[in-house]
Length: 103
Length: 148
Image (cartoon, rainbow over all chains, first blue to last red; front, side, top):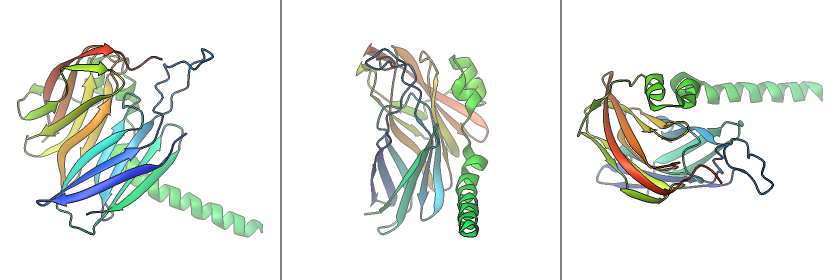
């Protein structure tokens, strides 16, 4: 099951660093469960990072990103109080997003 | 009752289309490249065949990854005008791991944890002005991160 997200965005020296954690199993489709059955692929495919509503990073990722993915991105500009939004969509159509204020 | 339901459904449809449109326009999931089973096909899939080795692409990763399920890698491109950074792990079952497109304002930098099935070359590929530049690093894996 896809779970909650956590995000922290901090501005320092004119650069905003965004760290985001997405709770997600990121199943590769190669792992077997306890009964020996293959666990179907289940992984995030698209990640979008927005700063004040403007898309700054668009990522496409595969099942080879680790479970509960953590990403860091950096954006030039961005001041305290700006809004950062990160959203994802997985291969099963599940989606989630989170917002944070730049500190 | 039905009218209300229909309106709600229509509204939801429009909303979904609105949310998905920018994604599909800019970065739909590149099925062909991500489905490639060798590095050459993966590179071709993202148009990065024959990327030039460059010291301006910096790939920071451990020499030895004790646990292939979580290998931290950090990529910075100092190539002016970098628009995207991709990660390819040659010996993974599906070598293309990720591709990040940077819009105005975003710095060409990304930090992510990846899975590695076995010891392999890892490539970071930066795209700038239609050209591709790559950094390669061999990472030794003692326990693979793909199976169970």
